[in-house]
Length: 246
Ligand SMILES: [Zn+2]
Image (cartoon, rainbow, N blue to C red; front, side):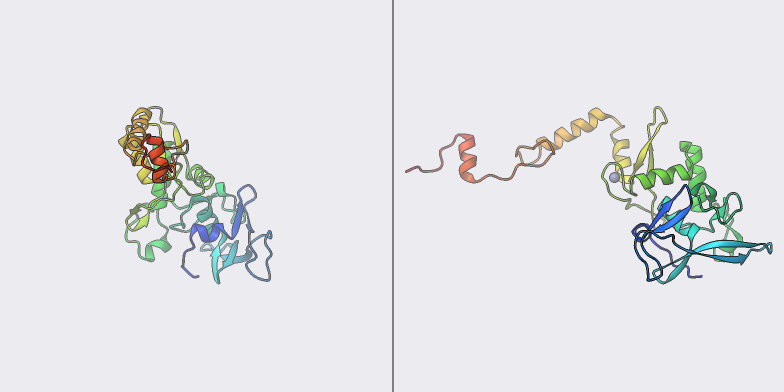
């Protein structure tokens, strides 16, 4: 099978996922055979290593074939799965998100494909890290990610900071006093809160400070500077009589 990955945006513009039924639905018409609103994918049977025959749903998109579980993983977590997506209950027809998981350690296939050690995969580390540090599962994270459209809750942009050549996932922001998980933030905004010691007063002061040192023009409620007035208007407001009257 083709190993080329899809991006979240590519999939998100074409497919909808109903996590309760596990169905993938076309948002667009990807070809003459499918209309927007119709279920995506074709079921194919395949013998697994034990000799058992199982059905897998395949989605053809942009001329490439992907398993539905890969596509769903990407849609829900924003990341292409680093390994074979497994089915918690062993039923490959159950594509509900809570039935999907990544192996805790890289599968044999991934190891022979170039991974040298039986180190935990990035996604698995994230899964177990999220549980340990924030008490949330990768499914909870995916839910938050989906809800925020993959964007930071403060600046509204996707993450840009890279880790080992790959864009990092958005950070889980939590209240360091209560431990309560807030939202997902980009690394910059997360650091911003950290540097300000999560202190609203400091951040408020910083806003006032920046405003008072902007070009001196009045700032409206939305923080936009008023348009530059003409010299005559400026003179009038300042009480100077620069304009000759006849
Ligand atoms: Zn941000």
